[in-house]
Image: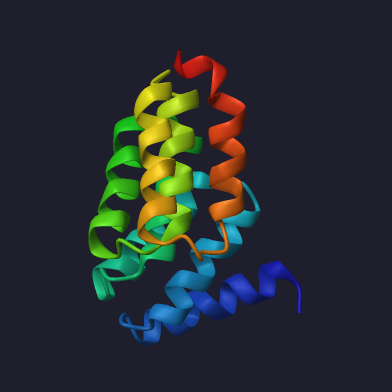
Length: 141
């Protein structure tokens, strides 16, 4: 099945059942993968309206806000994901990257990555957090 057909089918599912969270999330993911931030944001927000406790969707929403140059909304989405699920490592990594690259705040970025290592040292992205801490060590001084 090609993307066009699957988008049409998912949109049809969502129009038949406005609470079809799987369809909303899948549409967001398709548009995310295609680099269409505006459409991804639309469907991720729809999914979060149905269930606000989806840290992966909220983190992807933040990434799309960032891609759209909405830095404050991106930061808020990452922070909200962490607040709702303090063990969700991807939000920490992304928040730290945003603080470092978009806001030139290396100190706080390093604090966020270190917090992940403290809170959830077994998460699958802790290696990335360690790598980022190492890369930015000289910048922190």
